[in-house]
Length: 185
Image (tube, rainbow, N blue to C red; front, side, top):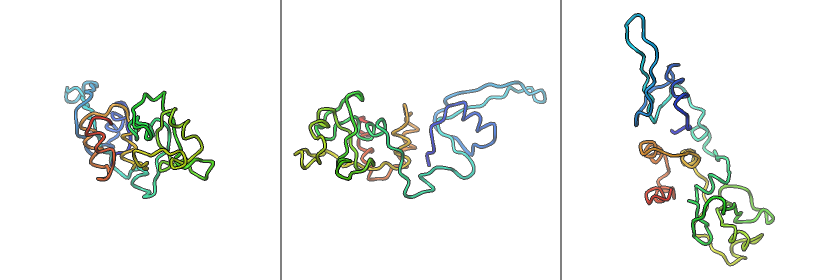
């Protein structure tokens, strides 16, 4: 299972401590060390885009079946593809806001299944009302991402081999499959 994004220095540390079980994907870095006095060979460590570590993982998505990733606007906006789920238009992040489908004032929760991305205009129009009360309709159903989906959503640029690895861990029913396939990830 995907665990987290690490940089090449952390990957090198895991290699040198013998904590890498296997690696695959594109080679990203080739680190050269010193020359061995015994063999006369120079140490070379190749860092790949995907590494698997030995031992048990602290991946909360594996340990707890009821794991819910932390909610923040950046991952929420990425989950919804920077699309206002009321007017169905894409906006830059600065023009988006978090909307509570069932408002907090009406007992709604600040939870993945109750929040959607909304442009500021739609959020102001809806205000403290439910979508039904405001005569607005959602264009998609909010969902709680799995751990693998969350890793993708909080990631930066994802290489194609890393994306293939992550996609293999998404649920078949994930709305992210179609969006990524259509280039709107």
